[in-house]
Image (cartoon, rainbow, N blue to C red; front, side):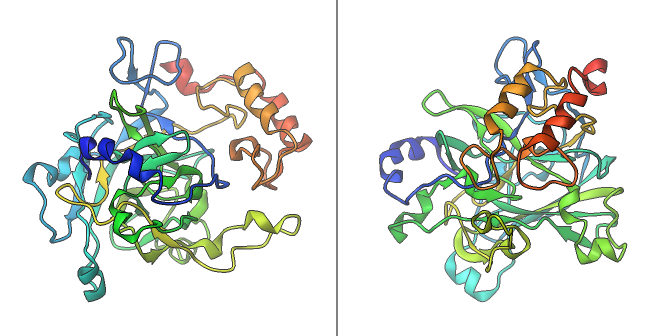
Length: 364
């Protein structure tokens, strides 16, 4: 994927590689580890344990199809993506999908991909359903250096439904510096690799994964036809996205925050940019995929298993905000159906669930 030392060396250059702004997709990642207080923890802390919000992990590799680009052998073992997240800082526990050069893209060479299967069926339950851990790392408060990928799910390993993504990035100001590109985390939605999952004493260590909600694909043609059952998902496929701008999101399936108060969709899909081309451990580096317990209480905004004052503080900070505003926080829009405004309808749900505790936390 990347050389930590090389990235540190070029941090000063990165700052001039693109213009960074805050986008509307500010949902945080899900912690891979927690401490004895149930809060986020670095895996190296003495009392850190795997977050009990997870009820299962990928158990086998259904297929692994990296690109033909050269990779060192130790990044080409797909079984590294099985089992719980290890949140390793040296890429020992990741499998790389490989990258493509421009001539490969122009020739139609397939992008790297991997399909994992699960003994724990993934179902469309309340809240997020599963989490994908890549190994990108945060380089500033809102910026991540990592590689992104499409996420698809299947019931039969033949028919898949892809999560419709949004990517609002712009290319590097200097095209020759696209290989040291970093993106605004809040510009990205429904792509694997959005959230940092790496630590280094010279960088900002953070160990989180990107959550996905099967409700987001309920209108996919394969779901509507019954070929993909979102209550019986047993395969997840990750497909690397070379960050050249030749591959697009599906922005036209999502609301454009600039269209308030009428709420209309983006008028076009957007090109996706990330660090490209990458070498040796090129392309997305998959570390783990975890299956979540259902979130019974939408008022548990910080996902620590209890609806309490900490959630209220988050809710209060988002109060009266709408999608696209700086204060907006999507997890506070908890009334159903969502209306992209945090208001009294959401507060009524929050008040009803006050001090409720998730079953998974009671059982831990």
